[in-house]
Image 1 (cartoon, one colour):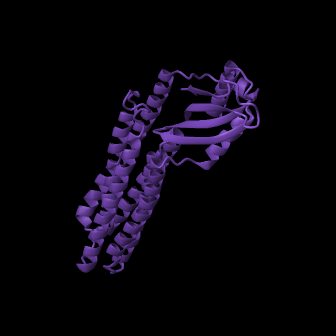
Image 2 (tube, rainbow, N blue to C red):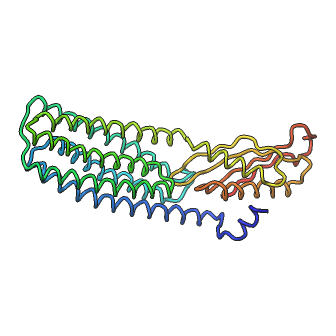
Image 3 (cartoon, helix red, strand yellow):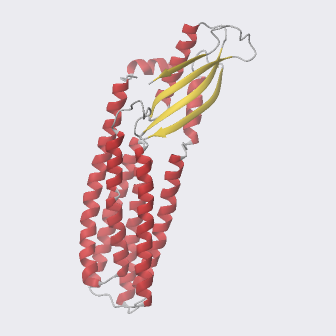
Length: 325
């Protein structure tokens, strides 16, 4: 009854066009987040690059390189969001949502390249020490980097979780660590002010280590998405919702996968084999509705009905599959 009432009072549709509109809406929100992030990080990078040229700080150089790379990750994600808007066809029957997973791979490779470059510059400066000038400007640039990255991180993570984008969340975590590594530049500036020429490149190496930690987290997120990993709590929620459907005697396997910003599910339920085809179909429809209402970001479910194994399964109406999108 709870699911039936929720179904009646909640405006929704299972038409394919409505699903396309929903995907386009989430893509628009993702694109807006990316462009704002690009603008903020781009401005931060320009300011830091000018101060790097004046001061010669290798720690700030590493931070600037990474901020620039973080801003440019908006490009593959933006392309993926645009591609993901395309409607499914006979070749790509599930649509183009997987383009975002490919963008996640590009982001991981970008982080890897920037960490290698930052490490190289820091080691080179340790081997060939040089004084850092305009330390006050370096300190201000470090603060600007922290503020810009933290704002972008919060915005990306919030939007990514809202629209179900693992790549955008990973990119937000990347930006958050960038913010704290920007603060580390202050340590290098402080050491240089005390005459410790090694402090600046040492902080550069610390920044590289922090980047590698982000790389590990981002790679794990992208790997899980490519391997069709979902939060086990979502599976538990789906099983609980199916058990509340009248006529469902047992819940079999529940499988889910992310395709772009949305989830798709497949499940087996056990019903009385003496039911008519029409009644078994109605139970499958109710089960599909219960799943969509219970699981966030779930847009489609395939429900397969099986006869109870202990009952007479000779009835030709014993099994039925229902697919609703």
